[in-house]
Length: 181
Image 1: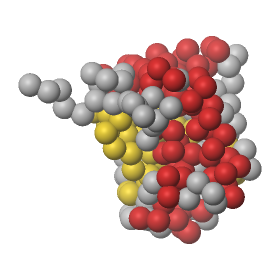
Image 2: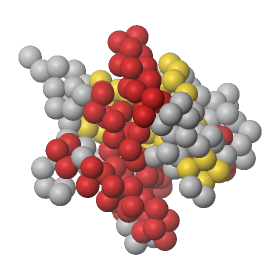
Image 3: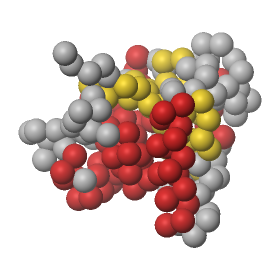
Image 4: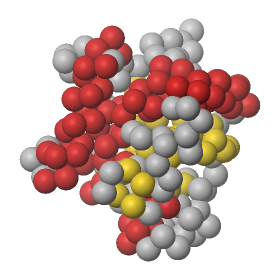
């Protein structure tokens, strides 16, 4: 009998960046860019960018815990984005770019809190990542899905996303899917 997939939702700035990395992680069965934690039903990208909906750009990750642990996924998370900048990742500024971990079960909350506390200690108490139960998730528009894989030459992808992918390659070779090195 195989163990069912688990799901975690993460906000680490632009979802193109986080999606591009997590698509390379062994044990990750599916990633989907979306919006969560806001107050508007079924928002679109333009509404999110207004900063008035309360949503964060997020990545919903379905993973096989027999191949990659939640702890490992969170360790990647804390390396590929800056958890110490409030509502900002690089030049991307606004509440939609905040750092957040949105858990799907009490068991996940325990692991997430442990890893968050460790990251906060490593960053000398400066981590601003929010930790909350997931609510109000909406998938992003189709053109956002698998964006880096489809448009690696696009300017933002070439200059921003590619750097995060390279950092993942260098730091987490042990977690890469076969054939993605």
